[in-house]
Image (cartoon, rainbow, N blue to C red; front, side):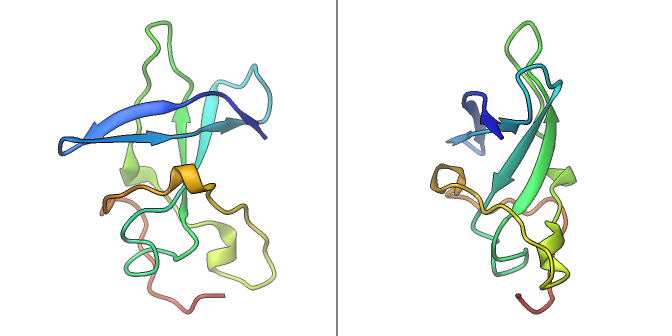
Amino acid sequence: MLATGILRFSIKGVELVLEPYVDSPDDDSLFLIFRDETSGVTTYGAGRFLSADAPGGDGTTVLDFNLAYNPPCAFTPYATCPLPPPQNALSIAIEAGEKYHGEAH
């Protein structure tokens, strides 16, 4: 996957960044792999996934963390999933999105 740049945003006054990925430079959506302060507590320990539209002409996009979801490896030991890169570890809790209360694989 290709890293396309950096998404800068703030939540409750905390400035954050995530590095999104695409399969090709022409993709119209971004793929994000992230960890946050809920990882391993109320969400899957290895992290979660999120998709977003590629930035428009004004350079902005919407990150809707309500749509964050668990990777396939959260549900079976037979799946392999990419781990979030160190730069995608958020220093806050993202309480939105899919939760996880199962056994870790």
